[in-house]
Image (cartoon, rainbow, N blue to C red):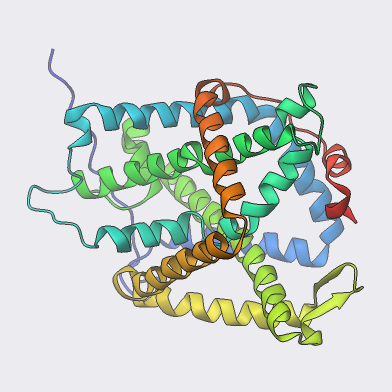
Length: 352
């Protein structure tokens, strides 16, 4: 029995001229309309938007929590299998004569900036502190919250969120896009990775819906990162310059002012737009390389001027604990904890 050849005749209708030249009008317009409606909803009726979106988020967590956790675990083991199998691990994405466009350092720099970036700088501290008061080991009564015994499990689940499992999601997505785009010479879109499931159906409305959802999800994800970055940027500038207009609130609980946030947002947006329009090979690479160097300098500062022995011993213990519990954490899902219970479990130094 012969194997049916894969479907590769993916056609996306693009505008031949005008403002949307080279782009799909249905995808572009629908994405903009939906994002604009979402933003206006949040601006005009913030309370209503917060209530409804929070309810949707809780419903999705309760419905898809187990599926998500197990899927991520399968992603990780699938990638380990690809790396171990010689024929798969050596396979080149692209033609026989294809050579890498970027050096290993530049490639890693861009992956580091795009995959972690501000999130790592914020949650490298916030994640372990939050998990010190609430994680599955604490909730089942094995250790007490905010105790010395809870440190190990706090780092265990921090590594779960930022270790191999987190990167497995990025790699599976990137690998799918790269394979279909550079090996099968198909458009670099999410729908291309779904052609083996839906075939020619991805040429129509179904494909447009998939790509529009991908665009919206990407914008929302970047918005969260920018939100953390803007707040951290304002607080960092304030710590260095003590410019009072950047902050508001009380001395015990200061927070970025509206003027400070808007000013920081304009600066960050400007710095982001310039490398984005100049392309991956120029602006993004030139911005990512010094970003990684500065991150390494920051790490070196902590090593030489901080509690290096404590940090490294805790890091190694947490990493070893993560590896030991790798399989069990990959396929064990827990129900979400309510926000009120989570806040009540945090250390007093965080909540006050």
